[in-house]
Image 1 (cartoon, rainbow, N blue to C red):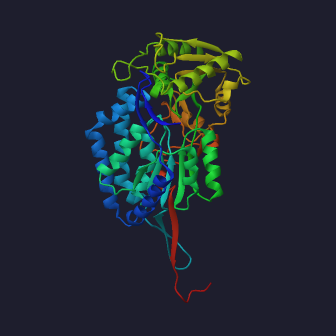
Image 2 (cartoon, helix red, strand yellow):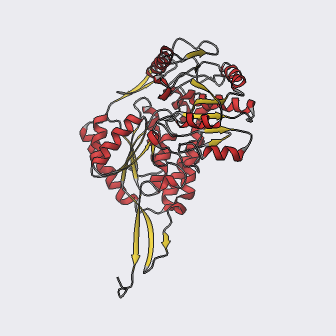
Image 3 (cartoon, rainbow, N blue to C red):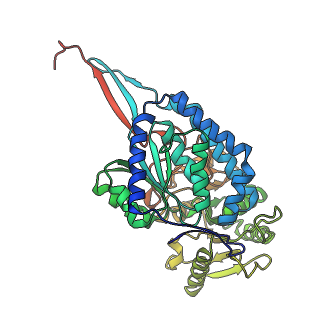
Length: 460
């Protein structure tokens, strides 16, 4: 696909960018490797100064950065500003904590003075998606750049202006050229980058299929990978949950970023004692969303990121209905121009329905009645995915207990799955492996090197 910025609200082509040729890609790889040799020797204070300046620039010019996201992928402007602030928070978090996270660990060795030190691995390659154009980049870049690595990123072809803005951000913050490199490259060139011996690790956020392809390629050349892939997060509602608050969070969990989030609450699993009332109130709340221009602060239902994404989601709904599900459209009719999809609730999705095991990326929720907690847990786990989940209950300790039985990388009690700099983010099963953010996010691409100083006359 060409690197092309298209406004999904107006269908206007905003900008088109050429892909790198072979010589330009080789130059970028050589520069990254050369920069790594000096960047790895910089102290934490020097790296932190760059990282903090990046955070400060984002806060000072948050509307400028936010507007670019909204123009390219349709996120409502308020959520775009929130993403810019979150991105700045992640920069600051690693500037403040990286040195502590990577301090040497002294071991209680039988002989000698043994210590494990964390050293950078080298040039890292990231493949990143369009749905959170800056947040996806910072959670890969910030910890690794603070660790002394340098990063190269192939961003989604649909958000090229955001990709360039993030690269410029690092340069404006004082990072040497080559610390952060944006790559406008093809899939074939991405394979070349993975194969290149100068690249020592690969991270991907995207579909399970893309993750499998990247991990296979990297595995053949013995390179560490992390994968953050799809999700079909369950939201379990127990009879003792605060119904009004739960409905509010269910709408937010399903509709934040217009439902285009790996950790969106895609499957609503509601105890039969309150299922009818929950569905009634959820339908009413979903119907209050206001479709329109995402630049308008009054808009709460923006377009999807592209017409292609909208067409895929509508096709999934049609397939679900074809196999016996009921689709209920709610709210005011969405515009016929742009990449809009009518908010929809799917009920009666049987286990043999092809949609039962698929990820729905947009304003479509699957609703399931469950007879008891055991059934809720069974349905929650009956998926190839295992990214996030949430449990709503009036008994927090009971919620913790249910959370322990759910097969996922993250479980929230009384809140949809979400993110914060200090919380590890990642999944299990077909949702991938490895963690980003928190202290764990700094450990993925560093070499845990043992140094043991042993007396020369020690016995073997």
